[in-house]
Image (cartoon, rainbow, N blue to C red; front, side):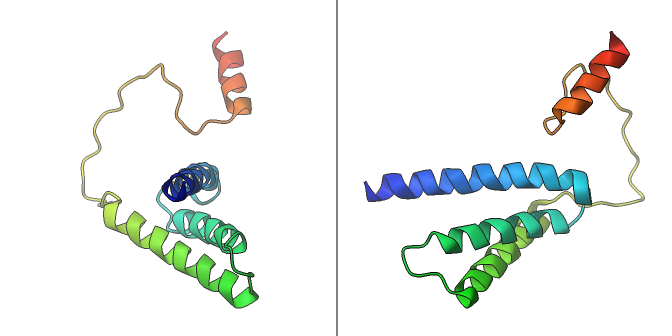
Length: 114
């Protein structure tokens, strides 16, 4: 029972983080460090509010900042290095939609193609 609750909590955290990160990429851009920091801060604050102990302002702020810093550090550790001197590969045409497209942009694409 104890392990199941933690697995469900971790899965909910990852799902929420991915949803926020996808949304924030449209706001800050995919290369911005603000994307993982803001998503981590938001989920850290939410997680701090649902802890079994009584949440305090300091506890929520600490959980928010700690989670944001961890998400940012992981993002920086595993993000591909951006180097302006690299030669870009030619784009390969694809019929697949990007993973983070909104319903309105898909509808616009269908209107233009059909």
